[in-house]
Length: 63
Image (cartoon, rainbow, N blue to C red; front, top):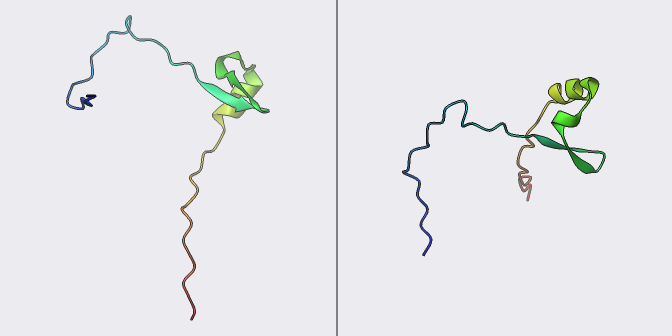
């Protein structure tokens, strides 16, 4: 039986123990790491604006 342990505290790591997270993004239909971008493309990536689409609601009935 699998049990989900949610009460365990997160470990505290020193800077030497930490590992950088590599960020990937979709470009022209395929995925590439952001670290391989040239300076212009990195600037475009930094200027991206993210949005959240509101959930759709059914129109109210007029009958």
